[in-house]
Length: 100
Image (spheres, rainbow, N blue to C red):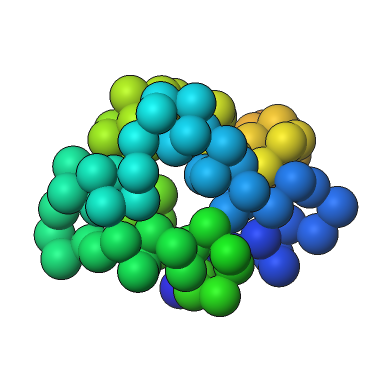
């Protein structure tokens, strides 16, 4: 299952964020694909940026590493904050269930 901007409705799309960050690093799609490796191509980067291809979680972290940014930098605005909040809610519920 991949990460897509469609799953993050209401947030800045993941592909737009990827494009913005790539350009801020003055990298071409071809250069980024070469750094990511593992069969990633210029076409693949283009598909991620235009939202026509879902991104696997492993690829997400490879892109983060290739761009030398944090996972939160690439996440659509607000997505990580909501994920962290949800994990906190889960932990509280899980802790409550263990004490029953």
